[in-house]
Image 1 (cartoon, rainbow, N blue to C red):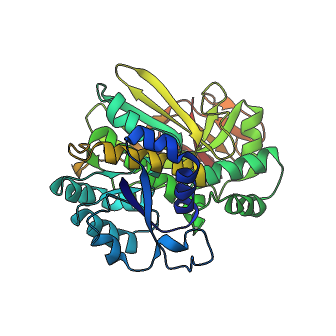
Image 2 (image 1 turned 60 degrees about the vertical axis):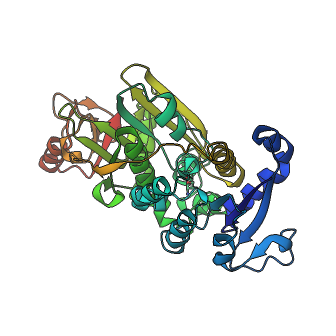
Length: 388
Ligand code: HSE
């Protein structure tokens, strides 16, 4: 019998309990022993729920139970979750999490405690919800030099953009729908302003290149300033507006990472990805482009990834999964990256730009610094990067 606990019984935590209820037999067959949910730690009163018998309020019960193998941290945030994760790892428990804020900001430290204590700290659910993407990145693609990662990393904003464009509903209503479906963060500004996608692109960078990229070090722009007029002009020109996280390695060995709304060419496989779905393209120097697609948020999809990690942690009890990243990456600024740009305003189109409708143009590839200078010279009101 293997025992695990869930800390934080919100959307993800309750999803994990439900996945165990649905699939207990097949999980036990894969593990070679039954998996028991021994504790749920939450400040809420669970006495009227089917989980009353396993509900606890004191973390030290988990910490001091020598028979507890794995702790699922689905509390969120980087305060209590950080303290309990440190203590659980120090107590020799494997820890599995969906908490991207914690992994992006404190992953280096937590992975180093896990190494010291010979336990696993796994976080597949922290990027892409139910999509297997981190394990393929650090395992299946380990034979490659990773060149670039780009993708839709936030289900809430993709849902909002899709509902606004295809459903014709206003931003606030679309956000309320995303919240009701359990996609949005407790503070939806983290979704809308791009912070959540920023944390995820940092985790992908950390794993791809083995050097820490902290969320506060990268440029992040969300969708709150988007004008539907630009979405319509983009559609007419064969592009879709998507919030993308992007990370790449430059020829001089430096890295870059950022989040911004982009015009995405209709020919790119990311363009038709709608609703809560995420899509992440990874380019390796041997494999070329691979794309990972699926539900990027929600209780059961996220719990699917968490449960996969619980099983993996138990299967790697003696020889832990070797994961981690080291010193800070040497980062190039967004200003240095070369791509085409969408500009809109009341100006005469420069000769070497593609003319779109509504006073918009698309430039030839140039650095963000050059594009900003051009936008200023023309008096453009809107400037967005383009992914071909
Ligand atoms: N709020 C996040 C999203 C949840 O919408 O993608 C999954 O990380």
